[in-house]
Image (cartoon, rainbow, N blue to C red; front, side, top):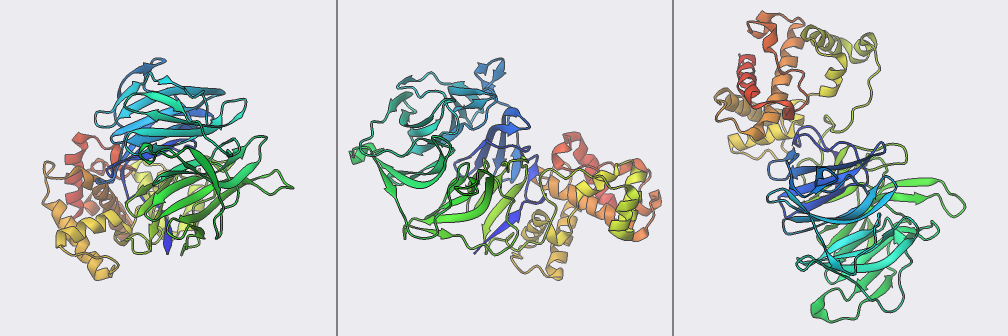
Length: 498
């Protein structure tokens, strides 16, 4: 059994990627996920945003290296391919505006340096919506795509050591040309699923390509696989990620059937079990999966899968979702503040007061007295201690116990007391940067609690000499803090504990 859980503000520090589709997100070892490029509101992107898995931190590295059209690294693009081998992320092709690209880049993630590669041999033509995978730790295989005039079915293998491309000569029957498909290496075979084909039909066929491993000495050849079980419907723009003994397929774009041309976007989760060689629907326990989408990314982080972005024909998403097994600590987490693009807030302060009751009214009054906009109070959405995963985890480490699923009020209270005592005794020099996000949320939580309990705001209520010392209440993320803010934040926080 698995659960979909929308990411909360307690899951990360730093600033997550802005909304986008047609981007790439790849694992670099077990330490990082690197997001590159994409498209939003007809704007093509070329930014790099990195998720540091160990520290649960999003950051944007300052990259150096080759310049292209006056900027470091590849030009803005979407619908390209990205492949990692060791610490290197390789980028090929994609689209910028109406132009298909055929340039080839590598990013060294050890030093964050871009290099444009001058390769040789049988060079692939410029294209977008192609698919690629790593063969072992040295080669890349690229197949299909759209060159602006025709759908492609060619296969290229590139040696990342010699930088030589070779077009693979494949015997026997070939899959129909396509774009928007997926390509995944499973042991010695490349599995290709779905895509949009010549003339526009969307496909749901599965093919396996042998002959990519030199040691096997096999003649390259395609085989169409027809596996038992609940196979996915025809689609393109979906994702396939590896999860142990199975492949996990999510989302994508299809049509309403052979009599209809209207678009359908999916949010189903289907697995290909490699042991039994059959399709299965992944059991999902909750009824609130992510909204349907295509041209998103899914990356595997341990037993979790992370969903980012995508497009549903109208909206470009900036939300983040976890797909987790039922024994994951966040599997049964109640609704918490969500990361993504908050909706445009149009309610008047009077309507807001009616909807949120007396506590809402006092919070609006607090916002007004502090000079913070009413919309910000909704966007802050500060969680209670029991819902603040990062806060609770820090507390359990400090008391030397693992709360796990035992989230009783007593255990939460013990963890909270331990964290607050820890921060009360901390100095700016001893405070760890990865604690800043939790510290900021608890600061805001204590401000809320003291104010709503007293239903008035005076300097004496907080034991503070001046109103302006409540400096950080309106801050939405610890990424907005400067280094010289940390001593002030810690000082104000300790005053709130009095």
